[in-house]
Length: 195
Image (cartoon, rainbow, N blue to C red; front, side, top):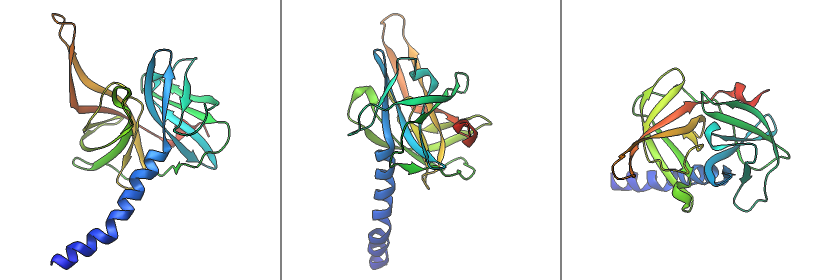
């Protein structure tokens, strides 16, 4: 029994680590004036796209990806109600390929990278709590700066974009309390690529 456990870890762990770092290598961040957010570069039909939340972009937004220079792009989809923005990038970037997700259900695991509070980029997992027509609720971690992170299922298929966290503000002290376990995710559809 112990040998089986050891062998299963030996043969499954490297693939899991590869999947995690494939997503990290697709991560980019957005700077809009003094604000910032997260996002990912996804390849679809031999073109590269940057996916983020609509509320973190403005006409002055610039995107940066780890060791890459500023990225030039064309906005091809922006829905403020759905809170998703998609840019087609000039040039092709080595990144993760778009896959259609399987139907999510309560308890499924999702994962993502984000830059909470301008800290170094961090990896998180979450669990699906609820799936609606246009939105997914997950229990996971979110903080200011994580908005726009692409949420992936266990097969690295794009399921949505982090659009918000539960947050309450106490007017008496001017601060707020972040309920970091409740994350709102806007569902993604390949039609948003504008193809």
